[in-house]
Image 1 (tube, rainbow, N blue to C red):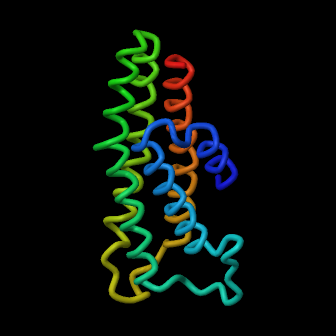
Image 2: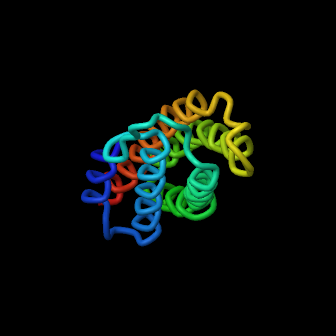
Length: 155
């Protein structure tokens, strides 16, 4: 996922400020996810569950990213897609519901884990984090398709 993010930043960086900021937030989400999951370069030797403060920090970054997409970036992309014609708009309308599905998963994760007080409430955390990771990967791919289509038709 990090490699794809770097490619996205190289390909579309500098073209629209909102997308630049959004891709930076995506990077923050990915780093936080890797840290919680104990993925390289954040390998955990003790395999203990993360601290509730680390989970809360990740949930905040995740919600910031999701919110930026829905309330800033998607509106701009859809507006540009309207300008680019019906094919571009149809793609945006087809991808948006698929992207929204991962939003629901992220919101559920946040609701379950953002306000933890201690580790006793972490039953099923690893499974939830893994499922979230799968949906985030799908979401990032769909977002990239949307951004790519925007720039292919407007170039």
